[in-house]
Every structure is written in C-alpha cells, then in structure tokens.
Image: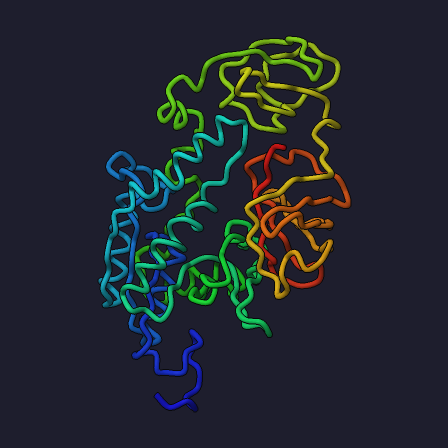
Length: 378
C-alpha cells in the first residue's frame, strides 16, 4: 500500500473499503448511528451485539441494553445498511466478570459501578479480541468520548458535549486498547445531532429512548437483584449512631447507600441524619450528621494511568478528579504509592465519597483524561 495515501476518517492510510471495523452494537441509537455512518462512508463494517444476560426475562423491559428487543433492533440496522451482524453469547463471562462482583461489592457496603467493569472486562477485552480475530483494523463504539492523537500516542479526552460525556465510565481503557478503539460520536455537539443522523440514515431506532438503568437491574431496583443473587442478603439489623447507640432497625444493609437521608425510619430527631457507613459484618447501618460525610483523603487502587510519563515519576500530580459520575471534576493532589495505588487529597472536601465508586483523573486545564482508579475502604 503506498505510504502517501491520505488518512481516512478512522486514521488509516488506505481507502475505507479496505478498512474493516467491528462496531459494538447495543441496539440503541448511538451505536446504530456509528455503524450506519461508517457503512455509508464505505467502510467494511461488521456489527457485533453481545447477549449479556437472559434476555427472555427482560424481553418486554424498555430502557435496558442488550435485551431481546435490542438484539432485534441492532440486527435490523445491519440489514437496512447492508453489513453483516453477529450476536455473541457472553452470559457466563458477564456474570463472572460483572454481576457477581457487583453483588459482592454491594454486600460489602460499597456502591459499585458495573458499567465500568463491563467496558473493562467484557467490551474492551473479550469483544476487542474478537474484533482482532475478525481481522478488523479497529473497533468502534457509540460512547461519547474522544480519542485524539498526542505527542506520545493516542489520548483520551472528554466528549464535546459535557452533558453526554462518558469519560467517568471509560477511565480504565488502557493505552493498548485506546490504540485500537474509535469513538465516532465524541465530537458531536449534542445528542440531538446523533438523532438527526439516525433520521438521515432512515434508522428505525432514531426515536428510541435512551437506556437509563443498569442493564441487569430492572427499574433501578438493586436490592431485589442482590436478594436473588445472594439469598439472605436482606437480613435486618440495627441502625446505630457513630458511637454505636441503637437508634432503630433496618430491613437489610443492601437497601441503603452512603449519603442517604430519606427512608431511614428514625424520625423525631432534631438534626437530620445521613448514612455514613455500611457494616455488613455486624449488619449495622451507621448514621451521623452531614459533616461526617465530608472526605478529604481518598485511598485509590487498581489505577489505570494514561499520562505520558510514568505514574510514579513524580511524588505528586496536581490534577482534577471526579468521585461520582454526576459531579464535576474538582482540584486534587494525587500522591502515587505504587504504579497502581495512590492517596488522593481533595483541595475542598467532598460529601458522600463511597468505596466502590471510581476516582477519575482529569487535566486541570483541558479535556484530557489521565485515567483513574477505584475508591476502597482501608
């Protein structure tokens, strides 16, 4: 292939027709638009949908990804645009890599984020290997995030539309994975622009509502899922204050989250109380004043570093961090302990920092993501 060919829109020096791209298709509008867009541009597109759990039970459930209806929708887009589509059964992988850990983390008093683990352990690991087995040049997804070429290689950047940005859920993407991945929607100004493209390509999913729930948690009811996976997990226990005094009873640790105020059933107190700790071993829900939720120092492990220099090359990094997906990045000092562990000091304390959530690192001045890690209990 001549070296002087211009780069195509996916960054390869060859015609689109000679560039094979596997598109991860959930059946939603985002990944459908990616597949249709690349097919229209003349790429050799192969659509792949993962069956992640028993979709028979979820067939009629709206707003969950990869259920039976979603597989049908993905297949229909492939037929409309004229490219091959495969459904891969990843139920066992998904249960072992995502669902079981979700249940155990929740029972351990943490607040897990299974969508990150799914990207890390299923979509960007097993599916990415499948794409390579299919001799694809790259794999594309419908995530709202940007991949930019930097001086030291590909960099991960926030989406152009801050309201759609999914960087919090993709911090664990490794440099090797980033080299192979493409995110064709990351530069779009809004979700409306995506739907306009869907309408332009005549896709039946153009008006399909966004997925809201975690795919295997119907209607956001975490507790019912945990009870099925771990019988006995909803055993009742005591609600105690920070000194250990019993204030009331609860109906199972799994029904509570750090920072929760409503629904504690211990009215009649002068000042509002919040859940500050969950202790599954003693079956205690520990409550305290709002100030007790404030955290300045956060232990973080399993760090995935996306900086140009080694993580341990500095004693401290002055970056911004996000400790929940719904919060803006805040200034912090990150002190490496090893290549995968650090202590994060928040310049301004935050409330409701919970083990099991991610702590994602951002550049102080621009849109670059420097990776991140998992918050844990010391």
